[in-house]
Amino acid sequence: AQKVTQAQTEISVVEKEDVTLDCVYETRDTTYYLFWYKQPPSGELVFLIRRNSFDEQNEISGRYSWNFQKSTSSFNFTITASQVVDSAVYFCALGNQGGKLIFGQGTELSVKP
Amino acid sequence: KAGVTQTPRYLIKTRGQQVTLSCSPISGHRSVSWYQQTPGQGLQFLFEYFSETQRNKGNFPGRFSGRQFSNSRSEMNVSTLELGDSALYLCASSSAGAPTHSGANVLTFGAGSRLTVL
Image (tube, rainbow over all chains, first blue to last red):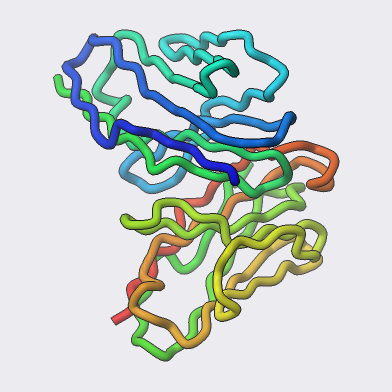
């Protein structure tokens, strides 16, 4: 069975701190895709990144970076120099086909000024 | 380019009633997926439609159904509502091709329809 675990339910940081959101997944598939989505208070999930299981290169996009490690089945997300606008719930998700994704329970990030 | 549009945004129903939610995908997107979000269960996949055909289905009772029209607009219906059906229902569309050939899609989500069952 596929499963995504985000052990951190809530994280609170002060602006400009770095913060890492953890994501651990379980799957027996050899080909799969991992995602991160952001859900601000408005409710609409916003896509951040997709990685496939064959691409373990870490990725950096501005203040965001992702660390994918197949050996530990983890796909962690780091926000550098956090800002108040980063406050949201962040979801890690796993899928292998189409629009069916298995989401983690989410991590609520609160960035205080 | 308009995003994914869901209507209605909010609605209140009573137990035993039925409800229909609508989703208009991004123009050109042929794949539409539906998710239920609750505080207890989180985000759970309901079903996916591609070119008017249901391609995938989550683990929900038969009271939950959906369909997709030729213009890719989709509707989902919940019959005989229960208190536990209170949730945010999210629709997402994708430009990817047939699900069996495109891997897991990048989904663009709508703002959701918040259903309260009393």
